[in-house]
Length: 299
Image (cartoon, rainbow, N blue to C red; front, side, top):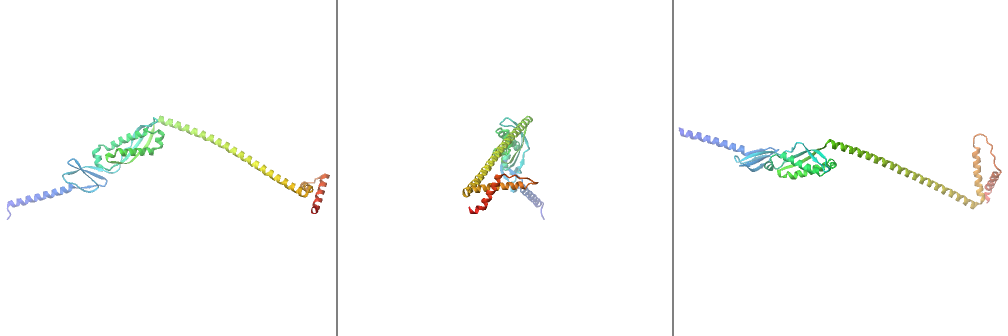
Protein backbone atom coordinates (compact mmCIF):
# COMPACT_ATOMS: atom_id res chain seq x y z
CA UNK A 1 0.00 0.00 0.00
CA UNK A 2 1.64 3.34 -1.11
CA UNK A 3 2.68 5.60 1.65
CA UNK A 4 2.09 9.32 1.93
CA UNK A 5 5.75 10.01 1.10
CA UNK A 6 5.65 8.07 -2.16
CA UNK A 7 2.44 9.88 -3.17
CA UNK A 8 4.04 13.26 -2.59
CA UNK A 9 7.09 12.20 -4.61
CA UNK A 10 4.97 11.10 -7.55
CA UNK A 11 3.00 14.34 -7.42
CA UNK A 12 6.20 16.40 -7.36
CA UNK A 13 7.60 14.44 -10.32
CA UNK A 14 4.47 15.10 -12.32
CA UNK A 15 4.68 18.83 -11.66
CA UNK A 16 8.32 18.90 -12.77
CA UNK A 17 7.51 17.02 -15.96
CA UNK A 18 4.66 19.37 -16.73
CA UNK A 19 6.93 22.35 -16.07
CA UNK A 20 9.63 20.92 -18.34
CA UNK A 21 7.08 20.26 -21.05
CA UNK A 22 5.82 23.81 -20.81
CA UNK A 23 9.40 25.06 -20.87
CA UNK A 24 10.19 23.05 -23.98
CA UNK A 25 7.01 24.26 -25.65
CA UNK A 26 7.83 27.85 -24.78
CA UNK A 27 11.37 27.40 -26.10
CA UNK A 28 10.03 26.08 -29.38
CA UNK A 29 7.62 28.95 -29.66
CA UNK A 30 10.34 31.52 -29.00
CA UNK A 31 12.94 29.73 -31.11
CA UNK A 32 10.89 29.41 -34.28
CA UNK A 33 10.28 32.52 -36.37
CA UNK A 34 8.23 32.60 -39.56
CA UNK A 35 9.14 35.71 -41.57
CA UNK A 36 6.57 37.02 -44.14
CA UNK A 37 7.66 37.48 -47.75
CA UNK A 38 7.44 41.27 -47.53
CA UNK A 39 9.57 41.63 -44.39
CA UNK A 40 12.96 40.94 -42.83
CA UNK A 41 13.65 40.51 -39.10
CA UNK A 42 16.66 42.00 -37.34
CA UNK A 43 17.71 39.72 -34.42
CA UNK A 44 19.72 40.96 -31.45
CA UNK A 45 21.50 39.05 -28.71
CA UNK A 46 22.07 41.01 -25.53
CA UNK A 47 21.44 44.26 -27.41
CA UNK A 48 23.85 43.49 -30.24
CA UNK A 49 23.14 42.56 -33.85
CA UNK A 50 22.99 38.80 -34.16
CA UNK A 51 21.41 38.06 -37.57
CA UNK A 52 18.95 39.19 -40.22
CA UNK A 53 16.18 36.67 -40.89
CA UNK A 54 15.00 36.32 -44.48
CA UNK A 55 11.41 35.41 -45.46
CA UNK A 56 10.47 31.85 -44.52
CA UNK A 57 11.05 29.57 -41.52
CA UNK A 58 13.97 30.55 -39.26
CA UNK A 59 15.39 29.29 -35.93
CA UNK A 60 16.90 31.43 -33.20
CA UNK A 61 18.23 30.70 -29.74
CA UNK A 62 15.32 31.12 -27.34
CA UNK A 63 15.68 33.42 -24.34
CA UNK A 64 18.98 34.72 -25.75
CA UNK A 65 17.98 36.05 -29.15
CA UNK A 66 15.08 38.40 -29.80
CA UNK A 67 13.54 40.02 -32.85
CA UNK A 68 14.36 43.69 -32.31
CA UNK A 69 13.10 45.10 -35.63
CA UNK A 70 10.56 44.00 -38.21
CA UNK A 71 11.47 45.84 -41.41
CA UNK A 72 9.26 45.99 -44.53
CA UNK A 73 11.16 45.47 -47.79
CA UNK A 74 8.32 46.68 -49.99
CA UNK A 75 8.93 49.66 -52.26
CA UNK A 76 8.05 52.93 -50.59
CA UNK A 77 7.16 56.36 -51.91
CA UNK A 78 8.09 59.58 -50.20
CA UNK A 79 5.35 62.20 -50.04
CA UNK A 80 5.55 64.71 -52.90
CA UNK A 81 7.67 67.64 -51.77
CA UNK A 82 7.82 71.16 -53.24
CA UNK A 83 11.28 72.72 -53.47
CA UNK A 84 12.41 76.22 -54.41
CA UNK A 85 15.51 76.47 -56.56
CA UNK A 86 17.32 79.15 -58.60
CA UNK A 87 18.58 78.46 -62.10
CA UNK A 88 21.90 79.65 -63.47
CA UNK A 89 20.12 82.58 -65.19
CA UNK A 90 18.66 83.70 -61.82
CA UNK A 91 15.08 82.47 -62.26
CA UNK A 92 13.23 81.20 -59.19
CA UNK A 93 11.41 77.93 -59.85
CA UNK A 94 9.28 75.68 -57.69
CA UNK A 95 9.95 71.98 -58.27
CA UNK A 96 7.69 69.09 -57.25
CA UNK A 97 9.69 65.91 -56.56
CA UNK A 98 8.90 62.35 -55.58
CA UNK A 99 11.22 59.44 -54.71
CA UNK A 100 10.61 55.69 -54.63
CA UNK A 101 12.92 53.40 -52.67
CA UNK A 102 13.12 50.09 -50.84
CA UNK A 103 15.23 48.74 -47.99
CA UNK A 104 17.69 46.04 -49.05
CA UNK A 105 19.94 45.89 -45.96
CA UNK A 106 17.81 46.37 -42.84
CA UNK A 107 20.78 46.16 -40.47
CA UNK A 108 22.17 49.39 -41.95
CA UNK A 109 18.82 51.15 -42.03
CA UNK A 110 17.93 50.52 -38.37
CA UNK A 111 21.40 51.20 -36.91
CA UNK A 112 22.71 54.07 -39.07
CA UNK A 113 19.76 56.41 -39.58
CA UNK A 114 16.88 57.37 -37.35
CA UNK A 115 14.31 58.83 -39.78
CA UNK A 116 14.97 57.42 -43.22
CA UNK A 117 12.18 59.35 -44.99
CA UNK A 118 13.31 62.72 -43.64
CA UNK A 119 16.94 61.92 -44.48
CA UNK A 120 16.09 61.03 -48.09
CA UNK A 121 13.89 64.13 -48.50
CA UNK A 122 16.69 66.38 -47.25
CA UNK A 123 19.23 64.72 -49.57
CA UNK A 124 16.92 65.05 -52.57
CA UNK A 125 16.37 68.75 -51.85
CA UNK A 126 20.11 69.43 -51.82
CA UNK A 127 20.75 67.47 -55.03
CA UNK A 128 17.85 69.09 -56.93
CA UNK A 129 18.90 72.62 -55.95
CA UNK A 130 22.50 71.88 -56.92
CA UNK A 131 21.58 70.42 -60.32
CA UNK A 132 19.09 73.18 -61.20
CA UNK A 133 21.65 75.80 -60.19
CA UNK A 134 23.87 74.56 -63.02
CA UNK A 135 21.13 74.84 -65.67
CA UNK A 136 19.32 77.66 -67.41
CA UNK A 137 15.54 77.77 -67.23
CA UNK A 138 15.02 76.59 -70.82
CA UNK A 139 17.35 73.66 -70.19
CA UNK A 140 15.49 72.69 -67.02
CA UNK A 141 12.15 72.57 -68.82
CA UNK A 142 13.35 70.88 -72.01
CA UNK A 143 15.75 68.35 -70.44
CA UNK A 144 13.76 67.07 -67.49
CA UNK A 145 14.81 63.47 -68.17
CA UNK A 146 18.47 64.44 -67.87
CA UNK A 147 17.76 66.22 -64.58
CA UNK A 148 15.92 63.17 -63.22
CA UNK A 149 18.78 60.84 -64.19
CA UNK A 150 21.32 63.09 -62.46
CA UNK A 151 19.23 63.28 -59.28
CA UNK A 152 18.73 59.51 -59.17
CA UNK A 153 22.43 58.76 -59.73
CA UNK A 154 23.65 61.16 -57.03
CA UNK A 155 20.95 60.07 -54.59
CA UNK A 156 21.89 56.39 -55.04
CA UNK A 157 25.52 57.17 -54.21
CA UNK A 158 24.69 59.16 -51.08
CA UNK A 159 22.15 56.76 -49.54
CA UNK A 160 24.17 53.60 -50.12
CA UNK A 161 25.38 53.61 -46.48
CA UNK A 162 21.77 53.53 -45.29
CA UNK A 163 21.05 50.16 -46.87
CA UNK A 164 18.39 51.37 -49.28
CA UNK A 165 17.99 51.24 -53.04
CA UNK A 166 16.51 54.19 -54.95
CA UNK A 167 14.22 52.66 -57.56
CA UNK A 168 12.88 55.86 -59.10
CA UNK A 169 13.16 59.63 -58.76
CA UNK A 170 10.65 61.92 -60.43
CA UNK A 171 10.48 65.65 -61.20
CA UNK A 172 6.71 66.02 -61.39
CA UNK A 173 6.46 69.69 -62.27
CA UNK A 174 8.49 72.89 -62.63
CA UNK A 175 6.45 75.98 -61.75
CA UNK A 176 7.28 79.68 -62.24
CA UNK A 177 6.07 82.80 -60.51
CA UNK A 178 3.58 85.08 -62.28
CA UNK A 179 6.13 87.75 -63.25
CA UNK A 180 8.38 85.18 -64.90
CA UNK A 181 5.41 83.59 -66.66
CA UNK A 182 4.35 86.98 -68.07
CA UNK A 183 7.90 87.74 -69.27
CA UNK A 184 8.20 84.33 -70.91
CA UNK A 185 4.81 84.78 -72.63
CA UNK A 186 5.91 88.17 -73.98
CA UNK A 187 9.16 86.66 -75.21
CA UNK A 188 7.25 83.79 -76.83
CA UNK A 189 4.92 86.16 -78.66
CA UNK A 190 7.88 88.22 -79.88
CA UNK A 191 9.59 85.08 -81.13
CA UNK A 192 6.45 84.01 -82.97
CA UNK A 193 6.16 87.44 -84.60
CA UNK A 194 9.81 87.30 -85.64
CA UNK A 195 9.36 83.85 -87.17
CA UNK A 196 6.27 85.05 -89.05
CA UNK A 197 8.21 88.00 -90.53
CA UNK A 198 11.12 85.76 -91.48
CA UNK A 199 8.75 83.27 -93.10
CA UNK A 200 7.00 86.02 -95.06
CA UNK A 201 10.33 87.48 -96.23
CA UNK A 202 11.58 84.07 -97.27
CA UNK A 203 8.31 83.52 -99.17
CA UNK A 204 8.70 86.78 -101.09
CA UNK A 205 12.33 85.96 -101.84
CA UNK A 206 11.36 82.52 -103.09
CA UNK A 207 8.61 84.01 -105.28
CA UNK A 208 11.09 86.41 -106.87
CA UNK A 209 13.54 83.56 -107.47
CA UNK A 210 10.83 81.41 -109.06
CA UNK A 211 9.65 84.31 -111.28
CA UNK A 212 13.22 84.92 -112.41
CA UNK A 213 13.62 81.22 -113.17
CA UNK A 214 10.36 81.27 -115.14
CA UNK A 215 11.44 84.34 -117.17
CA UNK A 216 14.80 82.76 -117.87
CA UNK A 217 13.14 79.53 -118.96
CA UNK A 218 10.75 81.41 -121.25
CA UNK A 219 13.63 83.34 -122.81
CA UNK A 220 15.57 80.14 -123.34
CA UNK A 221 12.56 78.49 -125.00
CA UNK A 222 11.96 81.47 -127.26
CA UNK A 223 15.63 81.54 -128.27
CA UNK A 224 15.46 77.83 -128.95
CA UNK A 225 12.32 78.28 -131.11
CA UNK A 226 13.95 81.08 -133.08
CA UNK A 227 17.05 78.95 -133.58
CA UNK A 228 14.94 76.04 -134.86
CA UNK A 229 13.02 78.37 -137.21
CA UNK A 230 16.27 79.82 -138.50
CA UNK A 231 17.65 76.33 -139.04
CA UNK A 232 14.50 75.34 -140.93
CA UNK A 233 14.63 78.48 -143.10
CA UNK A 234 18.29 77.90 -143.82
CA UNK A 235 17.52 74.31 -144.73
CA UNK A 236 14.70 75.38 -147.07
CA UNK A 237 16.93 77.97 -148.70
CA UNK A 238 19.61 75.37 -149.15
CA UNK A 239 17.11 73.00 -150.77
CA UNK A 240 15.89 75.73 -153.17
CA UNK A 241 19.45 76.71 -153.97
CA UNK A 242 20.28 73.08 -154.65
CA UNK A 243 17.23 72.72 -156.92
CA UNK A 244 18.14 75.91 -158.83
CA UNK A 245 21.68 74.72 -159.16
CA UNK A 246 20.51 71.37 -160.49
CA UNK A 247 17.59 72.46 -162.71
CA UNK A 248 18.37 76.08 -163.48
CA UNK A 249 16.22 79.18 -163.10
CA UNK A 250 13.17 77.37 -164.51
CA UNK A 251 12.77 75.41 -161.21
CA UNK A 252 12.57 78.65 -159.24
CA UNK A 253 10.03 80.10 -161.67
CA UNK A 254 7.98 76.91 -161.39
CA UNK A 255 7.87 77.15 -157.59
CA UNK A 256 6.79 80.80 -157.76
CA UNK A 257 4.08 79.94 -160.22
CA UNK A 258 2.77 77.14 -157.96
CA UNK A 259 2.54 79.52 -155.05
CA UNK A 260 0.61 82.01 -157.15
CA UNK A 261 -1.79 79.30 -158.29
CA UNK A 262 -2.39 78.25 -154.69
CA UNK A 263 -3.11 81.88 -153.76
CA UNK A 264 -5.62 82.23 -156.57
CA UNK A 265 -7.35 78.99 -155.57
CA UNK A 266 -7.69 80.32 -152.02
CA UNK A 267 -9.27 83.51 -153.29
CA UNK A 268 -11.65 81.59 -155.51
CA UNK A 269 -12.93 79.39 -152.68
CA UNK A 270 -14.43 82.33 -150.77
CA UNK A 271 -18.18 82.97 -150.48
CA UNK A 272 -19.94 85.07 -153.14
CA UNK A 273 -18.82 86.03 -156.62
CA UNK A 274 -15.56 87.83 -157.08
CA UNK A 275 -13.73 89.23 -160.06
CA UNK A 276 -10.06 88.40 -159.94
CA UNK A 277 -7.73 90.59 -161.94
CA UNK A 278 -4.59 88.74 -162.91
CA UNK A 279 -1.66 90.78 -164.13
CA UNK A 280 -0.07 89.94 -167.46
CA UNK A 281 3.18 89.08 -165.77
CA UNK A 282 1.38 86.38 -163.76
CA UNK A 283 -0.01 84.85 -166.92
CA UNK A 284 3.44 84.79 -168.40
CA UNK A 285 4.70 83.09 -165.25
CA UNK A 286 1.95 80.47 -165.52
CA UNK A 287 2.91 79.84 -169.09
CA UNK A 288 6.55 79.46 -168.21
CA UNK A 289 5.62 77.10 -165.39
CA UNK A 290 3.49 74.93 -167.60
CA UNK A 291 6.11 74.90 -170.30
CA UNK A 292 8.66 73.85 -167.75
CA UNK A 293 6.31 71.16 -166.39
CA UNK A 294 5.56 69.90 -169.87
CA UNK A 295 9.14 69.92 -170.98
CA UNK A 296 10.71 68.87 -167.73
CA UNK A 297 11.06 65.35 -168.94
CA UNK A 298 13.06 66.54 -171.92
CA UNK A 299 15.42 68.79 -169.98
